[in-house]
Each structure stands twice: as C-alpha cells, then as structure tokens.
Length: 610
Image (cartoon, rainbow, N blue to C red; front, side, top):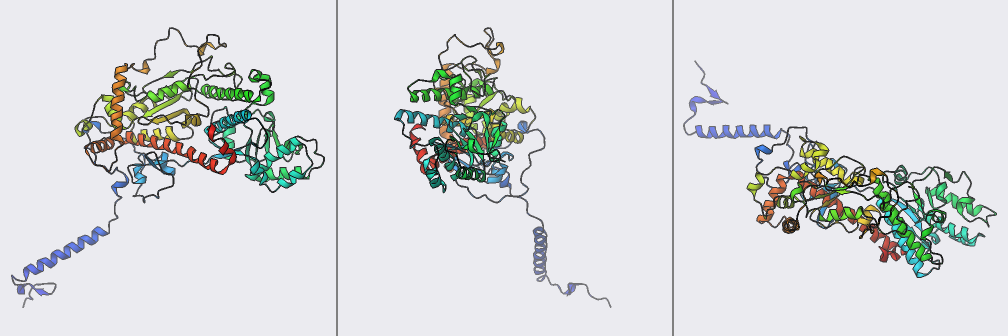
C-alpha cells in the first residue's frame, strides 16, 4: 500500500483549503529570515559622506567629464569625526591640523564638515633670544631708537620661522648664579656680559643674538635650516660675528658660566667668550651668511649714517639702513621679478587690486640714508635704486624659483560673476559651465592639460603651505583685504611711498637694465578702463554678501551658491584652504604677541612700537 505524500510530516492529502494560506505565510516568513541572515554576513560599505560634500550636487554635464586618470588615494573607510582643536576658528575660517593636510584633495573626506579645512600642522618655532637691559640709564630718544631696532630684529627673525624673545635683567636676576656674579671681582664689561649669559641660561640656552645680527638670507639657507633644527653639538660662536651670535645647549651654557665663576685672575677680562677655553666653546671660522652691523662694520662701510654727538639719530639711521638692506636682500632672491597671476584676464583687474598694490610696494625702494649700499654679508647685491624689480600679470603660474608669485584665489561665486560680468546665476547656467575653471587656468602651464582636479588641488595646497614651495609665493583670498601684517610675513617694513627716481645711479649690468624699445608683455593681458574696473568692483562687492551668508540660512542665494560650490569642488577647496591658512598664520602671530606682552616687561615696552 502506497504511503501518502508528506511535507515536514504533514500529509498532503490532509491539507485543507483553509490550512493552505497559513502554510504559505510560514514559508514566506522563513524565506525572509534566510535572506536577512545572508545580508547581515556581508560587511558594510563605507559611508559616502566620507568622500562627498554634504550638499546636493547638480547633475554632471556629459561634456565636462574629467579624463580617466589614477585618482589620489582616499580613505578606505569612514573616519571618526575628529576632535575640534583649540584655535581652530578665526575670522570666519575653520580648520583642523592634520598630517594629511597637504595630501588630501578635499578636506571634508577627513573633517566630515564642508566648512572645516584640513591644514598641515604648524611647525614649532625655535626660540631666538636677545638680551636688552632697560635698567641702564639712557635718554628717551636713545631708548625709543633702540626699541625700533629691536622691533626690526624681531620681525626679521619671525619671518624666517623663529620665535624671537627679548630677555632682560629680570631673567638674569632669577638665575641661581646671580648672587655669585654680583659679588665677584670683575670688570663692569664682564659683569654686564655675564648678565646676558645668566638670562640665556635661565631660558635653557638655544640661540642668543644681538639685535644687530639680521638674517638677510633666503629662508632655505643651510645655516637657518640648522638653527631651526635646534641641535647644537657644542657651544659655538662665529669668528666674524664676535660674541653677537651664540648657540649652545642648556648644559654647555651652564658649564661655561660655572667655569667663569671658578676662574681666577679675570679682573681685566671684558667678555665671557675670551675667558673660555677651547674645549668649552667652539669658534667657527667659516664665513657666516648673517648680516652683522657691528661698530667696526659701520665705521668701515656705513660711516655716513653716524651722527656724532647724537646716538639716537645714529640708531634711527641704522634702523632705516637695515630695513632697506632686508628688502634689497629679498628682492635679489627673485631676480626675474614679481608675477601677480591673472587667470581669465579679461575681467580680473578688480580682483587683483590689493595684490598689485602689494607687489608694487615689494618692488619699490624705501627711503635709505645710503641707497646704493648692500648688506654686509652680500657685498655684490643689486641695490633696488639701481635695479628696479619688475612686476607682471601673467595668466598662468610659471615654474621658476627666481620669480615671486602673488596669487589671488576667488570664491567660485565671485569668479563666475566677475569673469562673466553677471549680476546673478542659476542652476541651469552652472550645469552649462566648465568645472574648476580657475584652478585649471592657474595650473595649466605648471601641470599641463589632462590632469585631474584632484591632482591640481593637492599641488596647489603644496604651493600655498609646503615649507619649500611657500617661500616662492603668497596666496590671498579675493574677498578679503590684504592682511595688515605683511611686514611680519616678509620680515621688513614695506615702503608706502617709493624713493624718488633720480637719474644719478650706480652702474647696473646691461642685463638688468630695462630696454627702451621693449614692447609690453603680451602675457599681462588687456588693460581695463576705469569704467570696467568700477563695474567689476561693484559686482565683486555684491558677490561678497552672498559668499558670507550663513549656510544655515536656506534661501535662493545660498542654495545656488551651494550648487556652484559642489560643481566646482576643487576651486572651492582652493579658496577655503587659502583663506584658512592665512587666518591661522595671522592668528599664530597675534597669540604669540599676546603671550610675550603678558609675560615680559621688555616685550610690554615694545607695544607702542609694534
């Protein structure tokens, strides 16, 4: 007899029409559970928010598809939201310091925030100390003139990546060896020099300089690189700098002081270094690249600045001469002149107004008591009064270390309106426009065509913030005024008014003289009329109001702006990166000055001269 068919033990013959729906429901639930268990076993994919901006993007236009090319690597998984760091906001810019700041094309891939920019970490500044005893009796004019020289010294060393600090008698008197120095039998000159050493020992050594030693050399100079590293094998002085510039570790400085205190028969010694043995201090006889304005150098080379019987006036003349020499040294670093990049030059004049003013100031000659002279360490320079520095406005960035470049980065909204002389734009116009046209134009000659926006923006960030690249250029945002602290950035006072152009000049090499029949540089682009510049300026001013709107205030202006930013991701990243980098640079100096003004009486006395 045949056994009846079963399903999981249920005889099929016994399934009634009423039981069949229940069985089908059970089978459906079982299938759903099975599919769900298989899905859970698959690893979750990274969140798209790690790679994309969190704004709605316009539909890509087929004609604007980028060439196929290996992209810059991106994170393999969604990063954790980074912790907000101190001092990460200033003047409307937001940033996060991270080692990936120069290698990540789009900051939001790391910060998970469209507004917060990823910047490379700030490099620690090596302290450089100068001893100035304000307790010594001097006239008010003399003291004011010395403060001006101290400010020039601080500004020059700050621009070279150091942290200049003024030490005084307070630091010397807080040293545990002070009482021994005060009671020892020594000449007044040696006692005064020992006070300088005591103050230096109090801050644990490092670099000790007089304010007459200035870095009139390029930032990449080997000696400056060595000094910034802060690794000194021995207590060292340079033969051609006398005692005006010393380096040494904390232990070496302290041993030198102790050896002087234990030494007998030093009542006629006038300085610490002359009493030290050869195994205590190393005398480097190589010619130093630093400029030292010693009394001997002034007498031999710059005697014209000396005003007999008026020390204050002599010091003021010296300060003017030093500032002039710092500018001349900088100008000689870039013999091919200054280029203010002017992409899409037809309507870019208003955007470059501040940059051109800065370039002309840098290329000018300030008033100087001896305009035909060179710094003492650069005897064969080209004084600016004899060899004017050229300023041009090419449309593309050039590869040359002999050129200083000033770039102005506009927000895509400003660039779109000014470049097309439009009052407004809409999404349809955006979809028909090329992507990242500003960055592509600027870097075309530098990187060539067929390069992705990812590669262009990474290289651009290096030009702005990399230590080796940034010495050749300065990048500013179009919507902000030129920063007010350019004197600190370059290390000298920028001339507000150029020296009058006299015809009596020192001999100039033929290759440095301008050619009378030379035609205007075609790369400079068209010259805009006053009416055109006025129209550009009005459009730029209106564009600023839209750019500065809060993203949270959703209106038609911010929505279209967000669409334009998403369509021009590289241009937007370049603008935000430049703006944040300058904001942090300005904030760094402001915080340093506040710190030094609050902790040092000497620094406080310089407030009026800052």
